Length: 122
Image 1 (cartoon, rainbow, N blue to C red):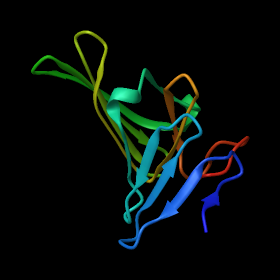
Image 2: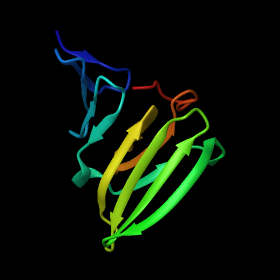
Image 3: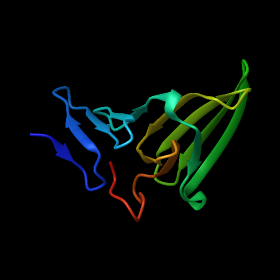
Image 4: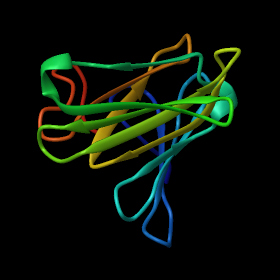
């Protein structure tokens, strides 16, 4: 039996403890057993933070043609993403954080303990 979340996204519980969410727009979000998420990078147009006051630490590093943003949330969650010189997302990862993707491919991260008030945590 197929399962869907309240936003109409298809939710697949995999045998290895991971979860795959397929959005109505066809984007795939994979949640690993450790709680980290993987999103197809070619689908991401921009990256944002839901609530800036939840940021505990921020670090920006430029290395080998990439601009890498590392963010630690107040609850210990970590988000890291890298852009190339043309503004394309080359790497994005999150640990103990929640994310949502808008229909126009903007991914927004939030502190896991607070989440997004208007939608359920994934």
